[in-house]
Image 1 (spheres, rainbow, N blue to C red):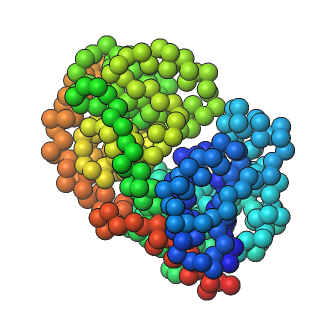
Image 2 (image 1 turned 180 degrees about the vertical axis):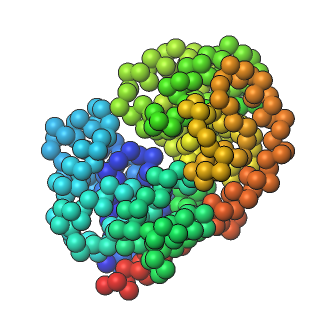
Length: 376
């Protein structure tokens, strides 16, 4: 049985499926596991993560891509075109596998390229409430892994998954974070509470275009809190000169950490370290709330969000339509957190079907192998 775990997009998706690849390689000797990436940098990152699974033996390969395209991705980041090109130039390679396990949905395009034999398996990435995570093309996957009943119920309700073709209780990223836990370094040389500002990348959803610079300026000019600015990885993926300007403008403040796209921004280093989450619509809120803490949400687009299931997480803390009085709002969010604790706990129970710190990647690996054996 040959199973491929390809990575054709940004590296933040890697942690959602690579632990499953490593568990499959160690638990199922009859499974020939391959990991393939578009760029050498991404491949190096995947191999560095695999080092946390020394018992696993998988093959790591670079996907074929014309040098001019690969250089463009390395310089300017991924685009829809680069992802589709990664599929097109490797369609014969993809056809040699029984299963292809992906954290994104672009790979469904393989069917239009004539890649029919492999079963397509989706691990998802993230555990938020936004509609994008419940797109109707999910039904085109042969098998789906998901974190818990919140996702299961929504996908079942829209007919996107079928009984027997999915498995719940899998959030492999937590497994990797748990293995990496002992390598965490202290982020600030003081004992101030730490705020994580984590805006979304989509301009229609994000607080960054309208509020972001005001948020950074506010924290630069106060001495009560530390601030970690770690937006969604994709916010500056194609805007690296702007990212460097921000780092120059605010990075010299000892109580501020500006991270516009390092691996620490995607491996829960910051969601684990912060005392309060400040954001808008990023699914990282779910990872942050595994340990209930204060939250403050920014409604930069004056969305009528009450009762909308796509904004359920905004019920877990105060919501601001302006940052004119951000300092007071942060203080109030800490003081009022007690009123939201039970709501946060209920939200996490609905989002993640987990049993303490028990790893879930083995569950996902076994479920995929069982499915592929039955489907062959």
